[in-house]
Every structure is written in structure tokens, then in C-alpha cells.
Image (tube, rainbow, N blue to C red):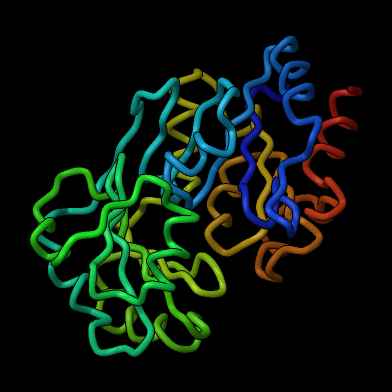
Length: 263
């Protein structure tokens, strides 16, 4: 019996215009009445998820699984080792159009020397944003969930190979979008966070359903027995998921949920 549903946001629950399904609150209310918990699982900052889902009581798997927040309190945190952060921040210094974001549990930091267009774009995804002179001055923080690198060009062909060569032996380097690469502590991913949430709830993968569309959703789908790749997903997800859901512009997540629970 399904007790927990986890869904990625961008490309999955959100449509291509970044809009939530209008009847999401009603569906979640119906799920709650059946004893089913719905959680979002995103690479996004907690502040961004809370901004977009302000009135919904649910667990938030944030920062690609390094952090779980529930009712504005951290219930799980697996931060990066502070001694690795200076090397991470230096790894892409020579790349044109590549900027790091130091993602802490409650705030994201960028450097004032970065492109104004990048800072404005980053503020869309990280509403709790602080602009500082030098990120390395904050490298001793004990609550750094990840370092996200934004690439003005194609991240997969430009910054990803460089970061993999520099950091891949010791840290997890994950392509999380067309322009984004996330560097995290090894073993930290959405799937590990989902398993932590399962343990907290006293359930197993057989009681879970998960939805995703991109490479940083692979472990999330592997942690749920009823796993769905969106029709618009990266091809790699079709090899992992047990099922295919309609696309994110077809209300795919809620269509599957309505059918499964006869809502």
C-alpha cells in the first residue's frame, strides 16, 4: 500500500511554464484523508519551495537530497565536508560564464563579481540569496548542502567535464539541468533522502511512489517501488523507472495519482 509519494518539481510536477497544477491542494487533501504523505524532492533551495508551496503541509526534500525540512524545521541534513569546499570553489574559476552558488541550509551565497544577469537569474531559484565579496571566506560553514555551478552555455559539454576531472574522485558531480551542475558529498542524493524519510515514517520502498524527469532523479526513482519517469524525461530515466507517466505539460503526476487512488 502506498503511504508516501515523492515528486520532483521542475519538468515533473511543474509544467513548462513553471506552473503548479491548480488542483494540487485538493488532491493532497484527499491523499491526506487516506493516510498518504506527499513530498516534493527538488534540487531547489528550501526557501524557493516554501515560496511556491506556501500553504501546504508536507516534507520538503531540498538541495538534491542534502536537506529535508518539515514545518520549517530541518529533520535531516547531510552537509558537505567543510575541508573540501575551498577546492570545490576553485575548480571552475578559469571557465568563462560559470558561477558558483554556495548553498547553505537556509541561505544561498553568490559573489558580487558575478554577472548581474546571473545574480538576477539565481534569485529566481534562490529567494533567500546573499551577495558576498568572496565565497571562500564562507567555506568553513558546517551546513553547506551543495555547491551549484551555473553555466551560461551548455553545462553538460562545458563545465561538467572540468568539474568531473577536478572533483569527481572525491565528491559527487551531478548534471541537474541544462545550465546547472551540483557538487555534493558522495552518496547524497534524492534517493538517500527519500530512504531517510521512509525510515522516519516506518515504511519501506514498497510503500512509495516517485516521479522524476532528470538525471538527479535516478536515485529517487530507485528508492520507490512504484517509480515513474515523465514522458518528457531524460532517456536515462526510462531505463530506471518501472512506469512512464504522461508529460509535465499533461498534468502527468496528478493524472497518475488520481488513477491510482480513484480520486
